Amino acid sequence: MGSEARNGPERGQGSSRRGEIVAAVQRLLGEWGSSDRLTMRAVAKEVGIAAPSIYVHFTDKTELVWAALADRYDELVARMAAAGKAGDAVDPRGGLRARAHAYCLFALGNPGHYRLMFEVRQPAVEPSRISGHPARHVSASLRTGLIGCQEAGYALSLPVEQAAQTLWAGMHGMVALHHSLYRAESSETLVLHMADGLVDVLVSAVPGASPLFPGADVQTEASRRIRDLRTGPEQGELQP
Image 1: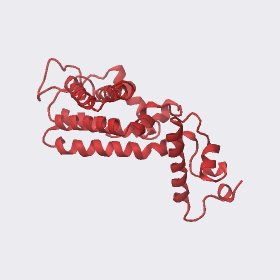
Image 2: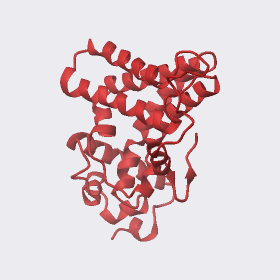
Image 3: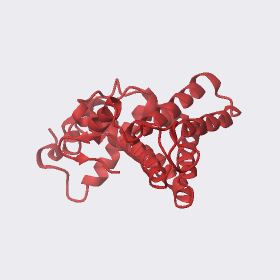
Image 4: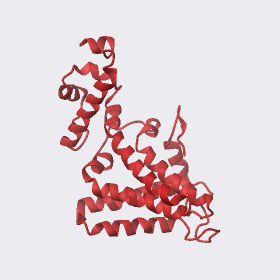
C-alpha cells in the first residue's frame, strides 16, 4: 500500500489528487457509457496510483460516480435557475416554462452528457441514500418554479412534489425519445412545445381558483413517497 493510503494525501495534494480521480472517472464513463465496468482498481490504474489510495477521497463506487457527474448536474441546474430568474419575479408561470425549456435545451444540446446523467445505469443505493444524489437539485429547481406559481395565486393540479416529478419525468421521456428515435434538429421545437403542454396541465392558465385544479393542497400517496425519497434520515428535508 502506498504512503498516501497509509498516511493520507500529502500536504497540499488532497484536492489535486481528488480532481485527478474525478477526471479519470469522467473519462472512463465517457468511454464505456455506463458505470457497470467501473471499479476502484480501474480508476486507480487510470490515475496511476494504488487502488487503496482512492479510499482516502471516496468511500465507494457510488461516491465516485456521483462526484464525476456533479459538475454536469450543477451546469444544468445553473442554466435552469438563470432562465427561471428572468421571469419568476414578474411572470412565475413563464419562469417555470423557462426552466423547463432550459432543461430540454441542455439535454438536446449535450446528448452525451445527458445520457450519462440520466440514461445509463448508475450504482444502486438504498432508498435512504438517494436523497444525496446530485440530481436532487434538478427537482428542487422545478419545485422552486412551481412554488413561485402557487405563491402568485396559480392553482396546481397536483401537490408540488408530485407536480415537479411529473414535469421532470415528462421532459425526460420526450428527450429520451428524441435521442433514440428522432434526432433531427427540427424536433427541438416539438420538444419545447410539449414541455409547454406539461406546464399547462400542471399549472392553471391564470391566477385564482379553478375547478380543473382541485387537488393541489391534498397530499397523495405519490407525493408522500417522493417527499420521503428526497428526505435523508440525517440530512432532513432538502430545500426548497
